[in-house]
Image (tube, rainbow, N blue to C red; front, side, top):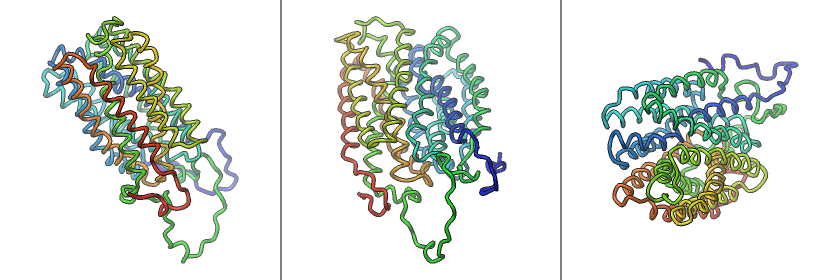
Length: 441
């Protein structure tokens, strides 16, 4: 599949401008993919925890799957980002589809803990090529001024995928988790094929500019001037970004977020249906409904933060998102004492905080570091920040295996969410003239 085979000739005379900028078709394809992957693989893992524990052992052993997935995703993110920058998203999505669908079909043969780990690692490998870095890079290539709202719309697919969690949970409970995974593999093939055909790399290859802006007349440039380095953030490599303070502020905040999100999303259904939350008396289907409500309600945060980030201080907008996330975890920790009075505010606070952060992370990276090496820089940040996501689910599982409670763990996570907010508030402001004037570490 040659991504430039059908590219229009730049500057062709009397070329009629399309009614809909092609970047929005990229957003639609990424929305569809995020919706399906989010609902069936990303968010539904919590529904698998109890069935896997019944079949294979302790919570810590099963939670290790999430840790291994995080480790692999972290290690692969810079590689995937580099490949997307060089090859474009279409080829990367095709590779991911083959690997992920193969893993889902192979799950029928799992009969040991070793095979469980091995095939879930294979699934994580495929997933790394399907969502996250590939989709965010694809959208970042096609948008600049409207990057916030474009990401907000695209990631709303991930949010709305929470609607699938009760359905997937019911399928696991009625057909068994292995059969359910096979059906998810069939659905993945159906969804991914049109997304691959829609996907394109960069608008400049097709005679367009980001946001659908008209091409300015090409000025004559003196050869001596053209050879002078501009220092523009648009050309910033990972090596240079690595030396800048904003890189490390964003990476630290991402580390805090990953510690929180991976543990909570892995253990939320067991926590809500376990001994800690007897006061609310939830069944698995009710807990799955509450879990699914988090990404759905997060659409408010995704769209709202996308709109705000394009118009106001994006750094402070993300910091506010971390504050909401910390507040959500605080309410989560209070459910054993306050019951529904804590559970009801937990969902919107957690949802809006989580939604705003995941939407604006890519947007702020594009604004600070440009688009040319976006995938590589974004992948480098993910590789470091996912260290927390590797350890956190296993630690939470070990805590429950040892003390039969999660309750004392959540207050510590409130502090981590607040630390993420502080990291964003203290991050240097964006300077738009040249990269040399940007603060360095």
